[in-house]
Image 1 (cartoon, rainbow, N blue to C red):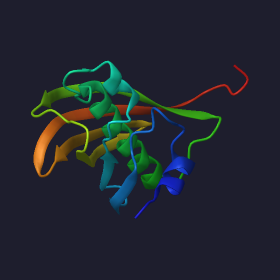
Image 2: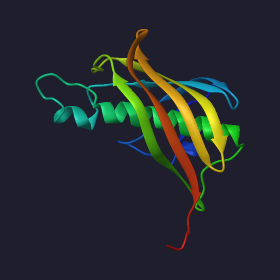
Image 3: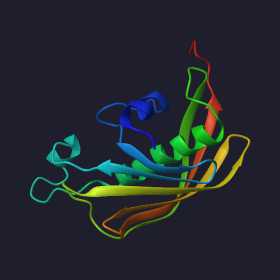
Length: 149
């Protein structure tokens, strides 16, 4: 549905912080299903943990937030620009169910529950081989910024 080149046009993130490799499904204004291929080459594995590499939970949540941003931009028929920024505003009910390791394919599923006045609420889940790795409710905000600042 959306390849890496299209994702790069929509998200301001770049290596090593771009955590969405492909969008598999996108139901406008409703849901998105994307994936992150987790490889041993990820820079965070060097220190988390060298003897048993595990993807940090905060990065799994960030991957979900990036998928949520793609869903929000699509719902609004817009793209990021120099006048707006998309922030993480809250995480509720985060539960980590299984570790994510090199070689795993993290499937990111996000549902838009509400959007009003630039505030977005999402229900999000990331899984590996059908097993939930993390689930949470995410709040994100789109705000105008001064491009001269």
